[in-house]
Structure formats: structure tokens, C-alpha cells
Image 1 (tube, rainbow, N blue to C red):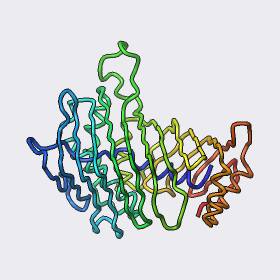
Image 2: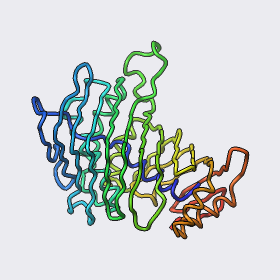
Image 3: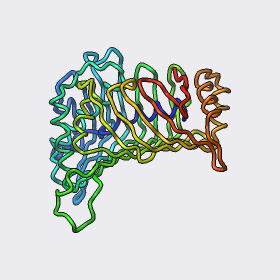
Image 4: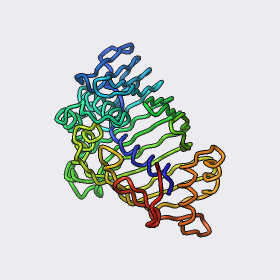
Length: 335
């Protein structure tokens, strides 16, 4: 397991509910949104060319999507933009206003998390209320899918771009016919996230994955708390999640992981316990060395020394607790 993998895992767990702007106003193909029902200092959200999906689909498409975190909520300029966004809802029960409020709150929470300044700009009650209709929709057969194109994330550490980003939320369904609708309201929610065509410039420099995808599961009742924790308004929150699958690729290297994690407002408060496998791992080590990334190369090299080797590649048991990364019980420096 590399420092790249554990950092990517923890950071991207914070993206769980961030799925974009509200449904278009009636007749508003050229409508522009600003604020989207969230009081400052949560965030300012703008989108143009909003259009509702044609029936029987439920959802919206938008262009020139941008979320900006005001200086009142962060000491750093933090923003997210995309050339286009398509949001699909699997149920008509989630109203336009609910989609608007939830998506705006999630975007604000994401940027607070990325900024590292957890000042609680968004009120806990507001974030809980924003997530509640989504939890209801998931419990009653709904699902949510969002796809962004040409994404740019800007923060104090630099810029990360991706050609495509997608997020999918749905509840694990009970066997059809055994229960009435809504009877499996406590069924775990599965969240699938993917990034394709990743690039960027970060300080300190690191190796970004070319692609990253993961699937996690958690109780639906944890979604409001997760949203609030991501926004920094509940600093003591800890949310258990199951990592069903995580995969990142970098050149020829492929790293897979599964296990469990605790999502918290900061990486230091978060934790993970994962079984990790890697193929063509040496290519990753060589790239870190060639780029003169001394700390990353050291972590990758030490990890290779303690790995279990077989015909398919390398294997590790990785833990991350209290800011300490351990690979097969051996602490590995990541800073």
C-alpha cells in the first residue's frame, strides 16, 4: 500500500454526496443559479444552461458549473468547476428544491474539506436537513447518478483536473417480492465513485493516479452525519464504512484494495484497515525515483520490502490510525 493510495482513499471518501446543482427553473434553459438556497458562508454555486431531463427521466443537465467557497469559510481560495453536469434521480419523490439544497450543501462541504479549514461555515442542522430527503429517496427505491465532464479542483495545494467524474448512490435492495416498498429502509447505501483522465500540479509534488474508482457501503442513517462531518461542522464525528472495492491505476501499475474505514472530518481523525494488492508495482517505484520524489519513493520502496509476493504481484495488510500508516505492521513515513 502506498501513501498515494491511503491519501486518495481518505480524501475521496469525503466526496460522497457532492452531486451538483438544482433542477432547472420552469422554462429556464438559460437560467443561472447563484447561492442555491444556501446562506453564506456555505458556498456560492453558479450554473448556466440548466435544463430538465425529458420525461420519464428525472434530473437535470447544466453547463459552466462552478462552486466557490467564500473567504469567510476558508483562508484559502478553493473552487470546483466543470464544463457540464448531468444529474439523474431514480425517483420523482425528491423535489427540485430538495435536490437543489442537498447538492449545494454537499458542494460546500466538499470544498471545506478540501480547504483543510474546518470552521463550520455550514450549520450542522442545515446539512442534516439537506441530506434527509436523499436518505428518504434511497430508502424508497430511489437512486442518484451524477456525471461531470472536464472537472477542475483548485485549492491551496494546487490544481487537479479530470476528464470525467461520476458518483452513484443506491440502496442495497432486499430480494424482490419479499418486502413491501420501504420495508428495507435500513438497507446499506452503496456509493460508487470514479475519476478518469486525472492530472494536476500539487505541492509538494506527488504521483496522481490516471484513474481511480471505488465502491463503499454505509448505513443510510449515516449520510447526514457524513455530510456534516465533511463540512467540518461536527468535528468529533466518525462514520464507519465498508470499502467494497478500490482501484487506482498509474501507468502500468494497478492497485486494488478492500476492507473497512472510519470517515472523519480530517485525515488525522480518519482510519482504515485494508487488504491491498498491486500489479506492476515496480513501475510506480521507478516513476517516483525518476521524478525525485524522495519521500514518496522511500514509502513505496519500504512498502515493497515488507510485501508478500506471489505470481500475481504484491499483497499487504494496511492500517492507517492516528495519522500513522502501517504496512504489514511496519510503520511507513508518508509526510
